[in-house]
Amino acid sequence: MKTVHTDRHRLHHGNAELIDGTLKPCFEMPARIDMILARVEATRLGPVVPPAAFGIEPVLRVHAAPYVRFLEHAWAEWSALGRTHDALPLVWPVRDLRTDVEPAHIDGKMGFYAMDAGVPITAGTWDAVRASADVALTGVALLADGERAAFALCRPPGHHAAAGYMGGYCYLNNAAIAARRLLDAGAARVAILDVDYHHGNGTQSIFWRDADVLFCSLHGDPRVEYPYFAGFADERGDGDGFGFNHNWPLPHGTTWNGGYRDALAGACAR
Image 1 (cartoon, rainbow, N blue to C red):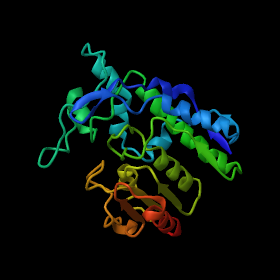
Image 2: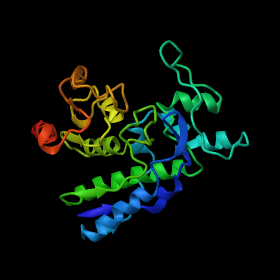
Image 3: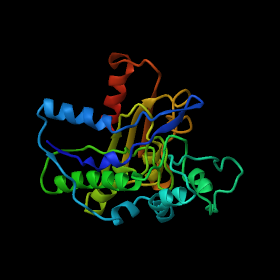
Image 4: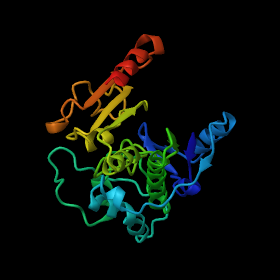
């Protein structure tokens, strides 16, 4: 099986994120890809190939244009104020605050387009997330060319990013971009199985009303685990998409034989 990878992911390397009430070194760092590539090579999974360039249109099939524009220009606006450190949000439009007017100041924009303070923007973030989307799209192209499977080694990751916001280390939703590309290319339906420890709230949101994409997620119980506000079992989709969204929230400490295997079997059956 071919693995799609680019070193352009290294352009994004945040210094700090807000965890446990304090700024700490980012958990999501380039070394994660190094570890995975080492295993790909050690297990002789197959050749590692570079991504092709697909332009911005496949991204705009999933993400709102104002949000994409923000990602492209955020660092320039931030650094124009003389700031050389990572850009992080200051305030969020929660509850009854306005969510229909994009702020003009970058401090406002950061909170307007972020769900948390785990998405630092650096000088290289935009180039890295564009490259990550190209990695996912190249995986789709390999399938179209007859490959039975492909491993798209995307960094930054994507499943917490929704159509119009970033969060949880995620800026563009690579899985959603790939799914939409498959549908645009003629696939009748696409299934996304998300087994990350945290719920893929962004992917769920993007396909919430879509009957062409089945989203199934196994994850830590959001009552006590990030992202806290999505991933409950009663979230089934809406409109045409009702019944095409399924969540298996699992308690901390769930073992393979103690519930995980059955949950995975249920997701695969769907």
